[in-house]
Image 1 (cartoon, one colour):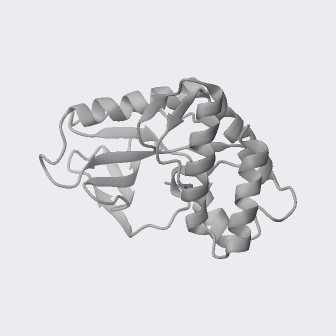
Image 2 (tube, rainbow, N blue to C red):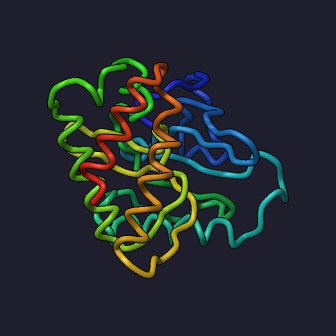
Length: 202
């Protein structure tokens, strides 16, 4: 979550009075994600929890924390996750910025236009993905945030180790094209995206 689109509900208070909800109900499906302010120091954090009680196992939260450790290991995020004091949900580092989905929606010539700081940073980000030798699911535009210097993962699916670099490249070329093209409105720009991936996803 960043300067993303979401439903607002200012000033709500969590029942333990440790956090104040700034933006609420940003999640989809069974997961509820909110931006909260920790009252002890005013720090903004992401609060991730079950939308419906009993809809996920406890392992879900362990997996969530494990994923953020993986992102940091590969250098694609500085996000950390830890158990909320309620022991039933997770808190995460908040990264302020614009998502790739927002950037593409606002600049439909992102891949066909000239070099920008966003584009240069995206090339560096792709290199980190390839160098990881892992394929990480769900690298969609809404899960990547530009913090002013670099792109960072704020959410993802599972990661699978690849047998070779060429396998890693193949997975990302196919899947990043499918995910990122969702935010492009013309076939011409999608073709430029494909050329971009062919050139830099190596």
